[in-house]
Image: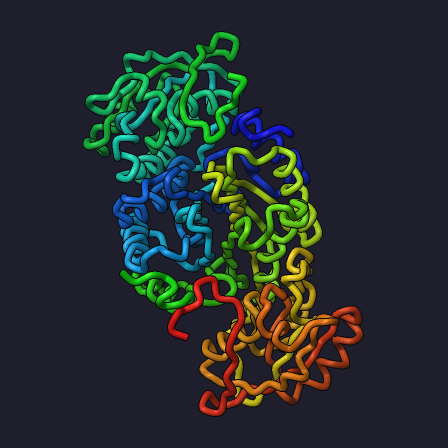
Length: 301
Length: 301
């Protein structure tokens, strides 16, 4: 009997998706990008996203629940940012161990409300279910958003010679930073509206895992300068590559636009670092990156 | 420290919802009905739903996973049916114990695909996450649907003297029937389009739990004839009231329309039983029902 660890997360997902009937022609983007993209109006796509965080996997039992609530929502907002879109309606499903305290759940909801309010989104429904005590709290978020058709950014549209940029600083999530996610919503929307980015995604599993995903989706390769990767103070290059949960934006820009981008960026987002870390190349010339977060690391590696 | 069991599921949800900022005016229905209802177009609402099932709570570890996949989707389809709407786009988030077999997940996806295909819906994305072995598999479904504004059915709009109807037969879910849910999608849409139902919901936690919810949402009471409740063969009235997971439709009808409904129903849905079980009365004259499924039964009762 094959276990998940025998094949790894990406192979598992490919295998599962193969069970589904082909998507209808009306569908713009099926599984594989940060959000699903479905028809909404003549000018607008709807973005759909689901995500779950689990006690002792994504947060420790002794964390402040208000920060956990923030994180649960912020992860999803970051996915909308990565498509150039805006979050709108949220639903939450809680799997609750019966010995959970009412106050901890109230704190969780306050943290969710903090984040929803900051990013202009609304909670419109939810479900609760009991889970076994050994499970810990399960928080599953589903959300819709929108993006103007002319602003939609995918991870599959990077082109040869494009320059590769990241926002913020990478690494250090394991030291607690993962609870203070600041989704780059304004930055993502601006990049889309200004037509600077040719492809974009958010960094959830670490640059070493996510950049190869962008490259694979775009059928291209990449070369990056490891020393150029912006690092959280006190963190090594390995941390920056592999910790995961940075929730910064990773995007590509046509070389001719790079200077103009840097100049405008400093004016609009003086507090958000922007760094060029490398270049898109033909897939045969790509460098290799390994590591990054895999929920089910393959035993074959 | 107050635990969930000290206050019960409905009180917990009320307490959590109080943490959220008030819904914007653009919102038709906030938390509380089978689906959330948000603006879509001039003629149409969008319906949003999230739901989760957990191993050893909603299904046993030795169940056929294809049936579990069917159930995960069918529960949500039933919620769209209850609003008079149609399901459209689905997302799935799996929390997977690392020793889970690849084949069991492939079977799960096939079951989900069976149900999606039957009811004309499409899976457009998902996430996977590791959970601890003790947790068991967590399957969280999020979905969108649509309903014409003129056909939307809520649980809050029942009126005094309306007659109370249920589809199918109740009870027996615990004996395995819960995996063979047949959402009443065509029936729900027909009831909405024909304007027969004045209020509607689906039966997920048992008539004894759900009818009082409909009554409370509508600020009315009810009287039912326990002997009239249609029962799965071999099941008692208690089973029919309390087992839960029937996924039949519970709805109210103006007395003047009841005869016409019964006649037309037999023509359109000869295979689906339809039974009048009681009547809506002023809330002061309501009978009491107790029991039904509560994930966190209050110790006070």
